Amino acid sequence: MSEPVAPPREKPANLRKHVYLLLIVLATGSLGGRLLSLDSVDVYRLEDRLERDLRRPFLSANDRSRWCTVRSLVEQGTYAIDDIQSEEGWDTIDMVKHRDSSGTPHLYSSKPPLLSTIVAVPYFVIYHVSAWTPWPVTLGTHPHLVGRMLLFVFHIVPLVIYFLLMARIIERYGATDFGKLFTMAATTSATLLTTFAVTFNNHLPAAVCVAVASYAGLRIWSDRERGLRFFAVAGFFAALAAAFELPAFLFFGTLGLALLIKAPRQTLLAGVPAAALVLIASMGTNYAAHGTLRPAYANRLKGEDFHKDNWEGMNWYNFTYMRNGREVESYWSNPQGIDVGEPRLGWYAFHSLLGHHGIFSLSPIWLIMLVGLTRVAGRWGEELGPLATMTGVLSLLCFAFYMTPKADYNYGGASSGLRWMFWFTPLWLATMLPGADWLGQKKWGRGVMYLCLALSVLSVTYPTWNPWTQPWILDAIDWWNTEYE
Image 1: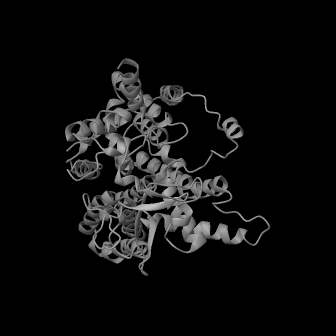
Image 2: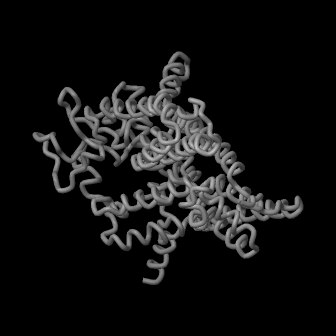
Image 3: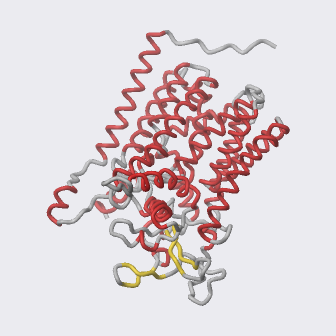
């Protein structure tokens, strides 16, 4: 059998031209997103006029829910957030209510507590060390300073690691210079994952963990690495991804099974114990917070109201609480806007794929991923064949999970993309490589790729200030309906 012919390498001058064009496309898409979101925002002047502070570094009820837990853990030693959420600027709708071990009802974040517990560790150091100085620094007194410090540690640093690992994967499995450059440009600038770097969320850490576990898994599968450290890394970070993003258990289970088949001894010796540590930590923090191994969102029983004398099997999301001296009903007792949900499954599926929250309409680069998927999925002789096959199957299963009748058809709430699928980003980028290599050898193909890249960057940069906002396509639809109704 003859050896496959490698694609011809680009001449340096031509390669530089492609780099120039990629940079131009990235800048054009970025400027387009900023232009579409252009508005006059002068919060400083408004603050002077109203004589009150309107600015806060926590951008939505979603991330404030987690920040409330971080503060409460360090400052009060409890997962209950009653006191914190009642402070000005710390309100959140993402909370539940249930009794603690003593039978007293309290409010808690509805988010799985492991991530907030991890972030609380460096905040514990900041809080207690600064208490010894004349200028104590806390999330309550200096939210911008402390919040940015913690996000830099837990978002920016992991993103840099993610970029470096993706660069290694791209360099190892890409076949052409243009395909590699294009995929790396997409990695750093064209996925909505980077849009969420400025807000405390679980989607970015989950995607980083998937990238780390995938890199270790590829070294084991393709390069026949048998060092125990690779199995420990793969097991630990695959489990951590699942702890941060529940559907990523699909990835955790599939990768674990693949490694068990490939190298059972090393997987059992290193991979399983490393994964077990994460699972124990995840269940332990959930039990410490809620007194049960069931996550908070598993206690959302539709149609079953909250009763003060019936706390077993109740709906933790349907309750009342005190705020500013008055009794307030939980937001989830009567959700508003996009949280009401789309009643039509077919319409919801369309908008999740090709419509206003569409995976492919907001990020057309994933169309190139589909090309790569069709070229190598199911071909076990191709180096990326197993990974592409796994990615395709898991993507379909995860998407189907969110299309089930019991799911909330709300697109992830007020968000600039279908955030529940963000953890697939590193897998989709790796699978994109064969498509980028193939299309990049054709002039028309490169034109299509440039257009897809520019539109994807536009979606990334459109939410200039806050990723917890509507996508530009939905804003355009709303504007059209208002203008021409």
